[in-house]
Length: 243
Image (cartoon, one colour):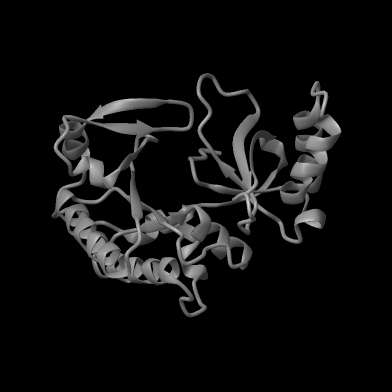
């Protein structure tokens, strides 16, 4: 499927049941685990089809499986209920990339996180950049539930673009952060499957941390910059958003 981290997956009902069975297998508290995590994995219990989100799993990936994480849409007294599991690829009925979520924005912003997302989307559009969203803001757009709150951070994904455009976008993001007093993390979605923190990329270190589906490595900053498209290269946003 060519799946990347942060992709949202709808998993079949049977697949969700099997995830719970495997989660509880060989655990003395298996039944308790099933009851606990059924609250976010099973639609009948959660009240909505919570997506599985593709996550990183260190080492060799299990053939025929994809590592996913489930998170409760709403924040409880102890924070969000989260669990890391594996889903069979054959049980994935639909995929939604972070880039496909932005068109779902329609309601007026109701907190700083929503406002920041709207401002970032507008800035990206003006600069002809393709951006996506992940984290709680992505879960909100996907489920339609109020998953973000006033203290929520914003997590964004930006596709490769000329260095000058990325630097300009980062300046806009920092302005939004200061204006709304919230943290915005932007991950640059590299063509090699790794993601790097945009602020770190434009920092002073010789290497930056790159995260892929199954490992974390240090990537040379100058190599990343050298592989970015040149400013005169035509950058077609629709090609990214249509993935």
